Amino acid sequence: MTTGARPQHPFVVRHADVWKIAVPASVAFITEPLVGIVDITVIGRLGDAGLLGGLVLGALVFDVIFSMTYFLRIGTAGLTAQAVGARDPRDGLLHVSRALVLAVIIGLGMIALAVPLHWASQALLAPGPGVSAALSEYFFVRIWAAPVVMINQCLLGWFYGRAAAATGMMLQILLHGINIVASIVLVFGFGMGVRGVALGTVLGGTIAAVLGLILLVRHYGGLRRLLDRAPRIELLDTTALQRMFGLSRDLMIRSAALMGAYAWFAAQGARMGEVALSANAVLLNLLMVVSFFLDGVAQAAEQLTGKAVGANWRPAFDQAYGLSFVWGLVLTVSMGLAWYFSGPLIIGVMTTNAEVQAYALTYLPIAALCTVTFMPAFVYDGILIGTTLNATMRNGMVISLVVFLAVALVAQPLLGNWGLWLALHSWFIARGVIYWWALERRKAGLFSPAA
Image 1 (cartoon, rainbow, N blue to C red):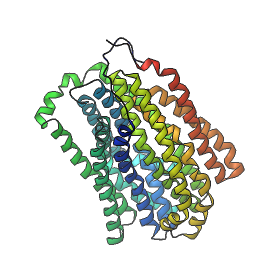
Image 2: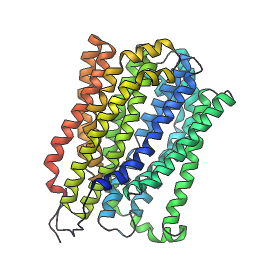
Image 3: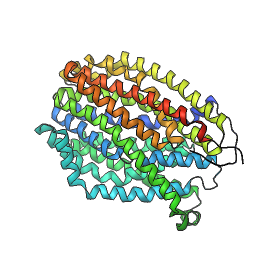
Image 4: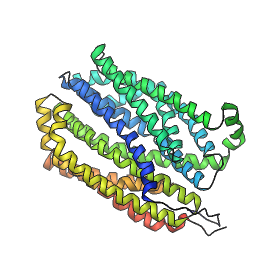
């Protein structure tokens, strides 16, 4: 909560300001689930449900592992946006520098812990023999991407926090474009199977990280000038470090709860068999396509509300809040309808397995409805990140996870896969309601009297 008088830097948020960030951010984000769809399609066309299940679980494992470090992106974005609003002449350089150092340490630590991480994944997911072998092949290649994944998260946070969404879009398109092309070539051209898909991910991430670092250095006029503007004594400032680690801790807990829900969902699908696992994965990947479009609006909400807090200007915050929900609703309804009516065609393209196709089509209606129930949670995520209300995010996510598990434990035994999807809806709705209630109580404290 903000205390004491602060300078005010008035500005106005318009529809165009939202879309200036949301459109390129959406284009950037949409490339990520597209990679998942292409990967599933590439392996799915091989006609082996075991390979497809191994890829799905392998991708899930890394989603869970890397989600623990999402704080590198979202924390950097929120802090940078507030620095921009406060007219920081260094454009959040200290925030991204601290994050990059931490990113390298974490990435190398993941590689060092590859064997126990793999063992834990196999033990928790309990896949069948065919799926287990494919999962192992995928895991021990993709783990080498960990350091560059961490670096890319920091860089994206810095670019988006500065409202340089077009640059973030370019980097994401490059990363995932290379990934897609490399996966297709390595699988179909060199017969590498799931190892080829994993190697494509490593190549794409590495090239994007190198280019992103070059752009960062050039923004500050070269490496020497960058180092001069980020002296060690300021990088190691105790108060700033405590704030960063506190934010990181809360966002890590939030990410753990977030991915815990998705991991539970996937694990329950795996226990229902390879067909259920694969069909739910197809539907969930399609849902992620919609979510990443909505994430563009959330990204705009993040930058604009964070800038408003840094500028100490409540009218801009209210404008960003309202416009984000208006456009979030427009997007989620239109895309939900498009997904529902085009679902049979897309599912048929993504997998040639007739059983998986039929199973996915059965649950398409309840899956498509998620586009409506998850919209408020996504937009509030952006607002809470921008305002760095990290404890609110953490608590809301943990409480909603409890709601999800409670509904799943009751509904799934009674309704099977229908119950599992119903639990997912309850999780989305609980998050939105909790975030709304908490933010209404905290709004006034985000701003101070003019200095």
